[in-house]
Length: 115
Length: 114
Image (cartoon, rainbow over all chains, first blue to last red; front, side, top):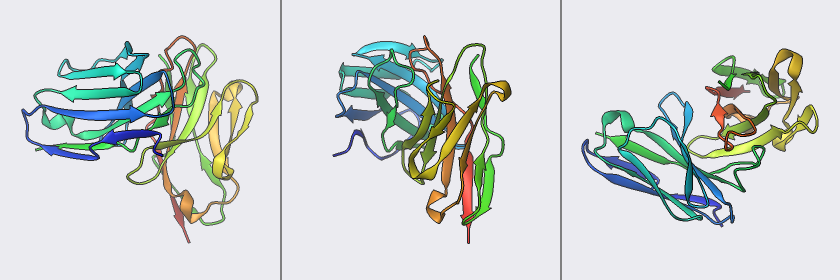
């Protein structure tokens, strides 16, 4: 059983398009995250949700909108895709937000390529 | 602001040699520190974490790290490298009250040669 899954694994699209990446965790965790890993492997947090409530919103363009229909799912919708959005996007989850030492479990990543 | 610095973007060791990957943090409050490993085309997997319980932390796959407050360091070591250890390694830090926000270092690619 995959603990944190993401779909699709690869996403190739044209500039200006709108796309979504889905994430699901079956660990029963309360907190989920989206990270962006750029071409130099640098990882940066984008968003975090705790029990469907947004708790971390880094300086991410408004074109990026996370949505959490329930605490097991956190989707990422991106409008008007730009070349600079090309990256690997990782979803992660942890037991809860109150314990900073809680391990974050990562999904396999979605490689987004904007042409 | 919280941050971690990983010295050496690329480290190469021979199989059987000591692995040492360096991580220094900047902090005015007690940190929680993590080492994650990323194998090619995969997500990140936790190797070990420091949560103030013990300064020497043992993790999976024979890795360990020592928290040294005086040096603000949390270096990752393994006595004997295996070919399967070749991967990207990330140090990360978080603090109480930050909603578990992880700040990652820039990563170190470990190459293991015969």
